[in-house]
Amino acid sequence: MANFVEKENILIRIRKYLFPCKGDSIGEIIRKIIFILGAVILIVSMVILIKYKVDLVNDAKLNEELSNIYHGSATTVQITDEKKEQLQKEYPKVMDEFLPLLEINKDVIGWLNIPGMGLINYAVLQGNDNDYYLNHNFNGQESVSGALFADYHAPIKSDSQPANIIIYGHNMKSGEYFGTLPYYFSMPSTGDISFYQNHPTIEFSTLYEKSTYKIFAGMLVNTEEAAGDVFRYHTVHNFSSKTEFDEFCANIFDRTSFYNPDVDVRYGDDLLTLSTCMFGPYGGDTADPRWVIFARKVRPGEDESVDVSKAYANPDPLFYDLFYEIHGGEWGGRKWDSNLIQGYSY
Image 1 (cartoon, rainbow, N blue to C red):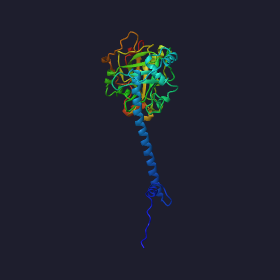
Image 2: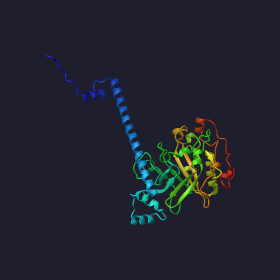
Image 3: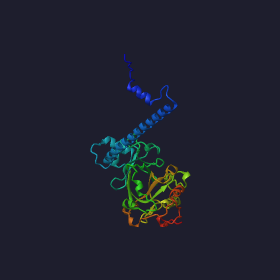
């Protein structure tokens, strides 16, 4: 009589092949553990990547909807007279275009726009800290993209606002939020300031006022002492004296990638600071660098246009130690025209 051997179930065979079993050699156990760890890492990575892509799609759709609401092209958003009156009492002097946005999220404090196709055009929020909107969108949903938000240390109110409004946003590879802000940057070796020349102004509206700002500087800075010089621009919201204002701006002009004599600054100017992370050969995690744009509000009676023909690249901006270790060179000292700061000399 023939001797028949029953074959194992395919699932049991797969389990024995992939997972450690009694009788396995040490080498076989190690192989299986390595395989399991690799599979777990692959699955987790795929889940993270899928979530990232989904977040990008959802946030892009959300931002388009918010833009339509703010700019008045959304026909489905309606706000009752009762709700409108309530919001106007809660937010004195608020402009009507912000009322539908306030009904969605009362953290909204403004709208930021850099004119140009595909550039910055987003709502700005201000929460109770500088962490929440790093990973939450306008609707309060978790998102890798976060949102644009103003520094919470200096509240923007109907009767007061900081002399230096600081707005943070992620440098998204998709180009969203502050993903296009580093276009203003150029290495000293190239001297390319064409992006600045094409986009020299910023439009920023708070809940209570529409304003245009003229960009006067853009700098690459280090945030970690281990990498050298740290300029703590993000801690400056107000100025107690002309000296304090002048020294702050002088430190900016030391580091800026470009100058424009047509856009000077003076004590009493309202400043706008846009800050984002910077990726590339600039020090990585050690320096954790930031790219920062500085602008000042158009003065009463001043023309909003900017003569960009006067602008020129800074051949020797002040960087930090690690930057010079990577790219070579050293700072040659302060050489910019002191007239860039009215009433200042060095």
